[in-house]
Length: 424
Image 1: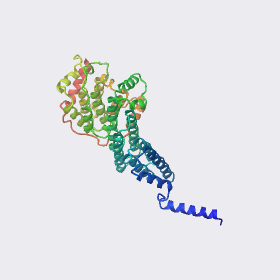
Image 2: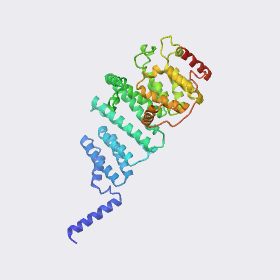
Image 3: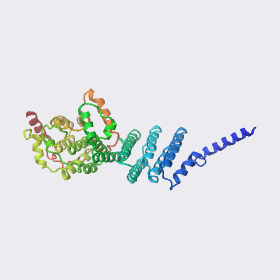
Image 4: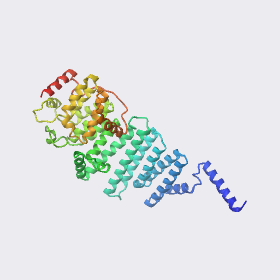
C-alpha cells in the first residue's frame, strides 16, 4: 500500500470515528463556531456574521444528513447567543428565518417546549433591539418588521404542525403584541400617509400588498386583535382598546362617509373573530370589560338609538355585539334574527377596515350557529380567510351573559325589534 493510500485510509477512518461520536469535537467548522461564540470580548458585527455563516453551514449539513434535532437545536442556540451575548438582532434574524424553514422542512412538531423557546427568542430579540443605541429609527423599524414576519412564519408553522386548531395560542399572543407595537411605532413616526394610501387602495377595490400592510396602522391593529382573539386574551384586547380615542362626532353620525371609529370597529372585529371560532366565553368577557371600563355613553340610551332611524345617530357597535352574542347563544331557529341583525348593522360593517374580511367572519358565524350556507362564490373566500387566521381558538362555547346590556332581551322581544325595523 502506498503512503498516499495509507494516509487516505487513515483520514477516512478518523472521519468515520468522528461521525460515529457526533463529530462536533473534531469538526473544524464546529470548533471555529464554538470559538467565536465563547469569546465574550469580541461582539463585533464581523464576528457575528462569521458565526452566522458557520451556523448556517452546520444547520444545512445536519439537515442533509438527517440530524434534524441537531439542526434545529444549533439554530436555536446560536440565535440566542447572537441576541443575548452579542446583541446582534439583524444578524440573528437571518438564522431565525432558517430555523423556521428547517422546522417546516423537517416536519418538526410544534410542542410546548418549542413554544417556550420562541417566547425566549421574542424577549431576547426585542431586548437586543432596544439596547442597541447605535441603530437609527429606520433600522429599528426594519428590525421590527423582520421580527413581525418571523412571528408570522412561526404561527403558520404551529398551525401546520401543531395540535391546536389555527395554531399555538402563546405564539398568537406574541404575534398580536408585536403587531400592536409596530402600529404604535408607525403612528409615532407619523406614518398616516401610508395608512391612508393602503385604505384608499382597499376602498378602490385593489389589493394591499404585504409590505404596505406592514406599514398600515389600521391593518396592524386589526391583525393584532385577531391574533389576540385566537390567543384567548380578551383582557389584553381591552387594555389596548382603552388606549384609543373615543368616537368622534362625525363617526357617530348616521350614514357617515368616514370609516367607523377605530376603537369601536376593533371591538366588533374581535367579537366577530371570537364568535367565528366558537369562543363565546371570551367574547362576553371582552364585551363586559369594554362596557365597564371603556364605553362612556349611556347603554340604555344606545339601545333606544339603535332602533331609532330618525335620531341621526349611527347604530352603536356595543349594542350590535351584545345582540350578536345573545343570538348566537340561542337555537338554530334564531337564524332569521341573525340575518336581520346583519342587515340593521350593514352600513357600519361596510365602513370597517377590509369589509370583505368582516363579511367572511359574518358568513362563518351564520354557517356555524344557524346552518346558513354561504353562496358558492363565497365558499373559497371563506375558506381562505379562515386558513389565513393561522392559529388559536381553543376553548369553545360559552359563558353567561353577565354584563351584556341585551341579556334581559328574550328572542320574542328581538323578533319584535326585527319587525319594527323592517316596517321603518
